[in-house]
Amino acid sequence: MPLWLSGIVAFALAYMLAPHMRKLALRYRFVDLPNERKIHRDPLPLLGGAAIFAGVLGACLAGAFWRDWLKTPYIGVMIGAAMLFVIGLLDDYYKTRGKDFSVGIRFVVQILAALMVPLFGGAIQGFTSPFGGHHFVAIPPYLSLFLTLLWIVGVTNVFNFLDGVDGLAAGIAAISATTLFFVALIKGDSASAWFAIAVTGAAVGFLRHNFYPARIIMGDAGSTVLGYLLASIASVGAFKSATVVSIGVPILALGVPIFDAVRVVFLRARAGRPVYKPDQNHVHHWLLRLGLTQVQTVTVVYLISACFSLVSMLVLLLNRG
Image 1: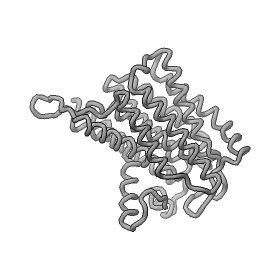
Image 2: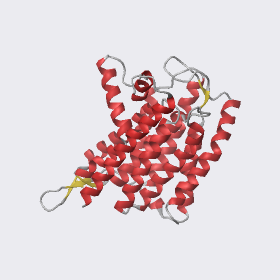
Image 3: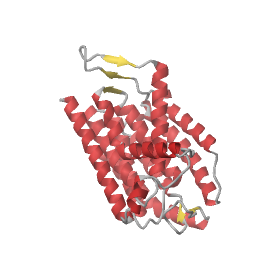
Image 4: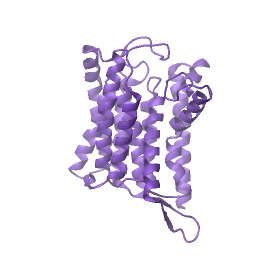
């Protein structure tokens, strides 16, 4: 079964399900309420994450008939994604009622979801040293576990930070996942390529309904799952056994959400505010304050993300050479 069919299945499911999720959300008042921090001024349906998750899950189930991915770490990845999807829906439900869900519970579930990746063999194992005969340097198990959890939980949260403008998170996810798809192809990792292109398809399918003016948004159930999937694919594929130089490839592929989040967390910490409390210090807020429209803002951030991705591919190709 050609790898690109994974993206087609994911795209079709996300594209077709998003309007139905919108109707369902409106019927049961599952909508994101406006406040002083958010850009939109009208309630927006919050069940977009269900369309995204269904798209990726459908592609994975379809692939199980042709590819033996159930024997790879991706069975753990999908278990973790399901956990985050459920807790994300619960968090979104609290938002629809004007309440805040427990940050502690969300963080614990994120750690448990991240644990699914090393539990099924997807931990960051080590790197190939460019010195002394290019021998493999194994990371001690406890350090491997810590780095894997730190990476996955970190990217899950920074991607959630990015979801603030119509079409931004879905577009960046598509660009990053496409980059990881090509990284997996170069490395000969068909399982990671299958999952990466599934994320691309689901994100693009949803983006058709999420681009400005958005008719539905993904909510935490979508943004955290996308961040988790991207981080997990990088951990299983690009990070699992890399050279010192190519360690930067997945970091660059996810450069926009990572560097934006680092900057925002620094600003919040310096101001004495909780780092997990949302504000309007992200790059898209800054661009909007400069006078750019939402479409212009998203386009600029897309271009920055594409540049990061191109650099990451160049680093990988030069390193292989």
